Amino acid sequence: MRIDTGTGTVGINIPTRDLLWQAVTDRLDRGNGFALATVNLDHLVKLRHDRAFARAYAGQDFVVADGRPIVWLSRLSRQPVALMPGSDLILPLARIAAKEDWPIALLGSTDAALAGAAEALVAKVPGLRVVHCFAPPMGFDPEGDAAAAALKDIETSGARLCFLALGAPKQEILALRGRALAPSVGFVSIGAGLDFLSGHQRRAPKLMRALALEWLWRALSSPKRLLPRYLACFAILPGLILQAWRQRRAR
Image 1 (cartoon, rainbow, N blue to C red):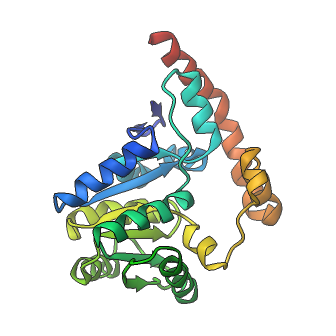
Image 2 (spheres, one colour):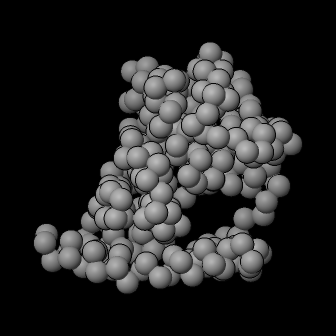
């Protein structure tokens, strides 16, 4: 499925979890890294106005669907994709890393959250090695010198997989730079996933997620910050539905 954002086109090129696990394993087996983004409506809103973000998305090796609306649009277009929120990818990918003895790194959030996330991951995934953690300071620029140094530190740490928890667009921009500065590392952008693991943020209950109401949970938890964001997401839905319908008719 492909989505026109006005600044480019986002292609969801990994439709199922099994294909994602295989793609990640194949890349890292060959000693090659990758950049993985999880597209959602908020990203599509930002991509309409942020050309740096659009360039970063164009450079992602793997793009999966994060959010029920993306999944519903894919079904409408007759190009169905599975729901793969970044937070739900952490443990399965960590298990693959442990099985293959690939060390991992964590970048983003805060020192306390990273320590808690690392502890939780090691407890949940026997054999997993977390060899590097870095919580950037306020004002961290993913295109700056400090970001380049952080990426080189990840490469020299021996990590093969790195979870980026900076939020969009910083994490996707950093992942793209990582393809050049840490070419053996797979970068996975996972938003608040490490905060959920560490308990520093509470995720929506499973029932609300199953009912596709996680957005409502988040909006009620932080209305001033998130209600305007979700209104912007709803505003672009008619155009996305039209795109999906046209793709359906063209198939």
